[in-house]
Image 1: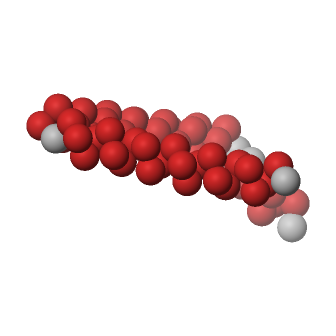
Image 2: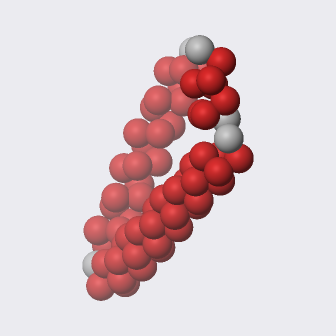
Image 3: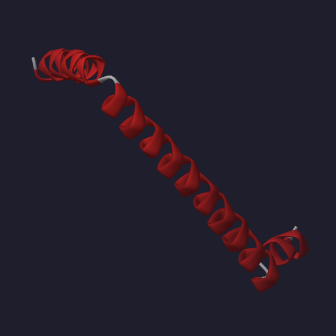
Amino acid sequence: MSSTKEKLLTKENYENVINSLNDEREKLENEVRKEYRNARHYVRKHPEQGVGISFLGGLIIGFVVAKLLD
């Protein structure tokens, strides 16, 4: 059992996990940036809908927070 733990806890495996997590973080950051740009572009083309969606989102969040604090 201890040999299995030693294999799992090697520095090389730790570095591989860290590198994999960093790669995933970079992919997620790129996706979020892309979606943010798309959302900004959409709101600029359709400002009325952007305001409406923001208003409804605020109402929903306010309702949920009020229920949680009640």
